[in-house]
Amino acid sequence: MQKLRLIVLASGLALLLPVSGHAQSVSDVADLSPEDRRAYMESMSPDERAAMREKWRSEREALSDEERKALRERMAANRPEGAGDKHKERHAQRHEQWESMSEEERAAARAKRAERKAQRREQWESMSEEERAAARTKHAEKNAQRRAQWESMSEEERAEARENRHKGKHHGKQDRLRPRDETSTGAE
Image (cartoon, rainbow, N blue to C red; front, side, top):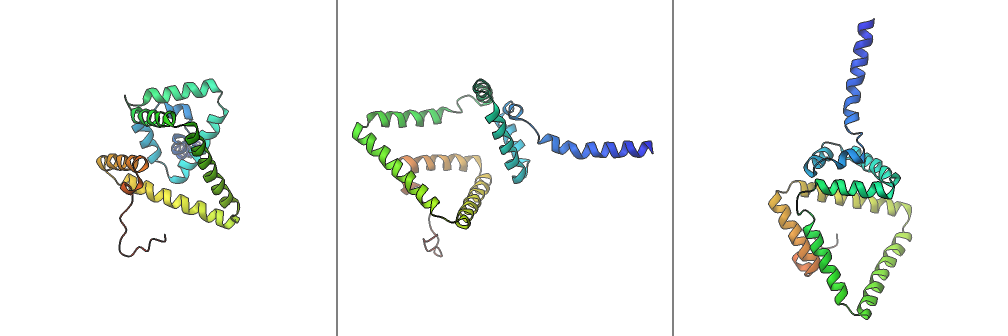
């Protein structure tokens, strides 16, 4: 009887071990290198990743400002040297562009951005719950498809895609358009 209890206890602990591996807190994951973080997240199912992101979100919201700042600094320390350089460059370019604009151009840009935001909000609010659910599902499917495509790419292809996306955003969208096949109608 005692051996049976020991076997049941051992098997119960063995079943809990995989779950405990996914129960890491934000601070534990922040200490991992980017490659280890990526491998850790890829080892989880999509549902587990969603649950983990939600858990981390609630943990981050519970942190004080000082704790959040310390967490960001720890994560930044784990990034490779020069990892944020492109982001800083693009930010500097946008800032320079903004600074070179006249007050009228800035006001027009702000108004255009506010108008687009209001249009999107109006469109969303005019949708029924079923339409909203369908839109959310379509968005999630599109993101999953993009993620699958991204994960199937080599590092060289990813670098090229990043560069093309950057060009498309800042140098006209024609560089970014996908070629359509003959069966496509264009009304996707």
